[in-house]
Image (tube, rainbow, N blue to C red; front, side):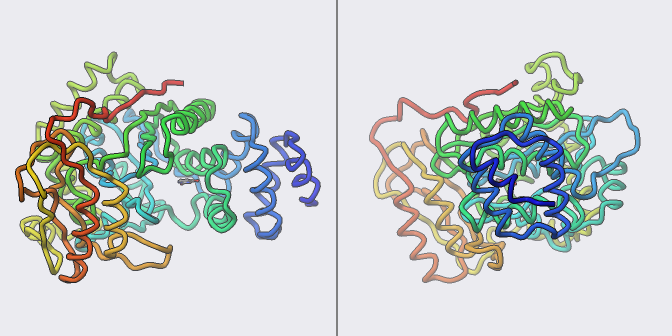
Length: 437
Ligand code: URA
């Protein structure tokens, strides 16, 4: 195809026809359009945007660039959740088995972390023996049999997104709402879902820094998901403070298991219950959000999702004995140190961005796609806004690879906390808004 006139049209702010978008995605995926031309198109889209029809055409063309998961007919609805990511965001881990126990099928295709944001697959890689790369047939078989799977995208799923995302990363075109919408939803739609709940975060440690930008992205994704036949909702949540009390790959798996055992932090439990409750309403399994929350809570309290977790990880190769043993350890890192409060008072700020940057820099995250990860490093026992601390009381603990690293991290982590003499009057709510359309 002659791609140049399409680049020029978009550069001039003209609307592209769905067939033109389908054709250039097909040709690009087949290697028939060079990267420099696609980069120029992405920059034109970055500045000129795409309207709803163009974004829909792009999303569906990207979804159809590879395999779409096909499931046998079954009364259990197919559901999933996507989060735009944040520090300590481990909701997917307890949520998948909870949803399976609530009578859903959950083909949760997840990603890896880059920069300060952790990735679900990196967290799961800290479980002895666990396999994240499964062929499509095994994904479908496990979803049918166990009810849930959490794994990576196969090579054959949504190849257009993989190629386009690499170009966006290198050409400064990642922060474009239509491109983000198409990228996220093409992957979710390739799971053939009945319903999808999106957790769009805003704040200092989020992809979207402001609530207004998060709302814009959420509205675009909700409209497009529904337009493409998947019942889609979004919750806007705060990401100025870390979620839960632990951040770092293994520490987050440990906290997820605590959540499944009803011993986890309240904010994590709230988001897990809320995400499940929305999906219950979206699929008409519950009439109201209040009734759905009760159902999800009762299910979590029953202990059944904790057993389902073991069933899911065992199906993906985990060594349950080694896993249980690892859970009993206070720390799996070489050095464990405490960050102590310089004075008594109330925590008025706990800066998620600083905590995320420290964890990335001590090896828990990636500076580049090729970086190796240390699963054992991280931060736990994080004191949260509104909590009382005594002088020399614990603000958080650092799990590090050596003493020098722990000392350097402690100096930076101290700056993440602010202590006030009085209880802070304004604590940001976790769930800021629900976007229904
Ligand atoms: N996550 C994605 O999968 N794609 C984007 O474009 C941004 C975040």
